[in-house]
Image 1: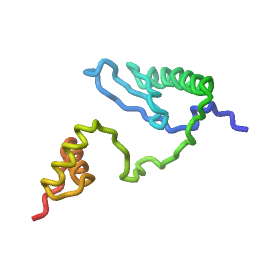
Image 2: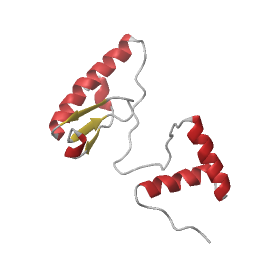
Image 3: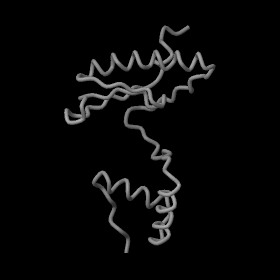
Length: 125
């Protein structure tokens, strides 16, 4: 039997947000939707996350819900695939724009996301 708490089986993400966001650090367990905590230091954020994670697991257990199986990825290993939920109105607008540009919805969204973070591939002529 493992000595780990249920939540300790998941990967934790810690991000420095910078002082302009109210808190300096964000710690979260991305696979457990909403399981996140903030702190002025990395250590404070991780301690707060431990408390949030314990409560998260307790609430799920009381509701009779199981935790999802942990997904392990090597650091830096990304599949290039993820799901984004948007409003029906935005979905329609994106689909119309993709048709206008003659590209797939997936391609358009990928390009717009890349542009949003400052990288966009050169258009093919």
